Image 1 (cartoon, helix red, strand yellow):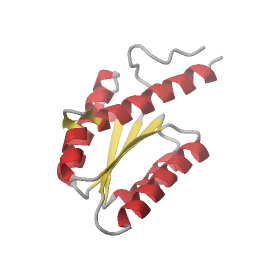
Image 2 (cartoon, one colour):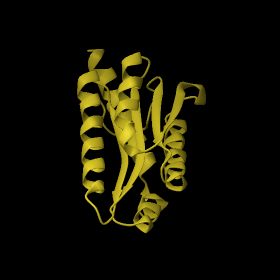
Image 3 (cartoon, one colour):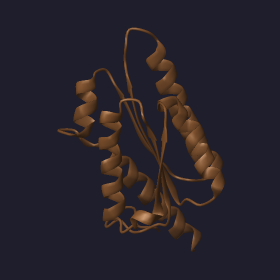
Image 4 (cartoon, helix red, strand yellow):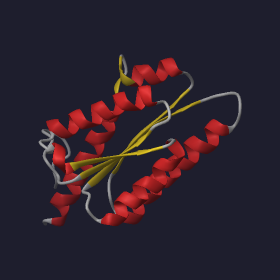
Length: 155
């Protein structure tokens, strides 16, 4: 069986889609994802970062990246903050659905780095604060899944 834990290993090219909305937070998530790629031994020239306007656009960006066939894994990074309207529910739910659909349709790991929070303070905590860096965690999940897929394909 494939190794699910242990040291991260280079898995090939990684595509990272980042929402520009709440850029103060998403930049910190991106820093965490890039740090994870370095820890896995993935060279900077093997990581492509694309910026989209908001969280909702992460799904179509991930789909476009997946269609190129160049990536062993994708990572999606964004923030949706709950407000006084149902906007949060639509954006968070549909973005989650789209990213999951891309992963299944392309048989490609998509690290889920979409923060869905009630307050900006919660977002800060999850972007390098006391709750860790969810960008790093999303990249690690995608890299580990790609490694498993690679190992299974070699058997």
